[in-house]
Length: 396
Image 1 (tube, rainbow, N blue to C red):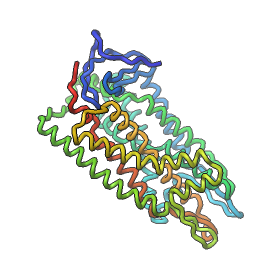
Image 2 (image 1 turned 180 degrees about the horizontal axis):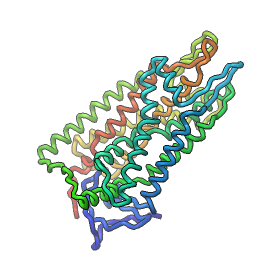
Image 3 (image 1 turned 180 degrees about the vertical axis):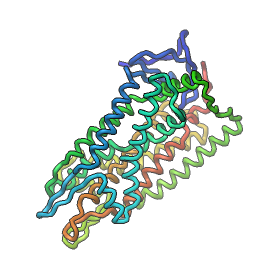
Image 4 (image 1 turned 90 degrees about the vertical axis):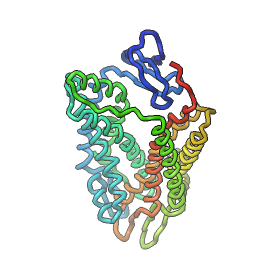
């Protein structure tokens, strides 16, 4: 089990907790050790054995499997003598040709572009850093990596593909292609990269190289208390605006059809709840539960949690500080998983295109639900967790 390190006499480095602003002195961490804030439990750093080398290896492996997942068949669908194949490139083209530009953009960015940029960036940064060299524009690129990471949704797309299979396996024959298995390995490699990245360690190493090579880095100026107060007010107001937008989007996302099935001239619209009921009737109880939690429970729960947190910091409450920060972490972590239903629609709309016999088209709710997930993610990002501890004094 990783060791949790707190303040002690041999501390070498003083840091400020991102979530509660407590000043903590940290010793030099060894392999398999973890440093956490003694007040709120925020993880400052976790040191893995040969972490940088592993990240490089996993990133290169991920890029190889990503390339392998593009040219080959991902899924094939056949019914009544008619067959259609799904692969990454044609999926995006089908969405564009059918004027589903928003969905095409979501798939392109979250599944291919952003993960590729992250993997290429960490390779670009870590190879010279391991050799004691400073990568050009290193700090800017590292900032970009951490800004993009929440929007990389490879593993969520994979779960969406599995849900899609369960939805259509009763009405047609499904065959998994080479790209499907390559994509699984790509998702696994991407996940391992993320698990091994240590934000504090990378910035610390980058700072050492900047000092060694005498690279000037502009440090942000110290803000006055008045400016901090204005910043805090802006954060609260921005979070309220995003939450209100999310509430407005929640209604059409759940009332209107998320997709429509066209079968032999008949249209059968399906809402998010309707899809959950269908999965339940097919006997796919675990998958129905996953979709219900991800698409119905999580969005509304995230809105309620963030509204409670934002109200509490606006009123400068000092109650349940530790509990509130835990709820914030939960809301921030689970929000992106609501994209499962969007990816299900993208896959089905790309795969099931058999002309007048049978086809699936995205509904109005797909765009509304996509916007809902994005807005709630932005709301979590705009919320300042350190405001929870605003009235607490730092004891060094």
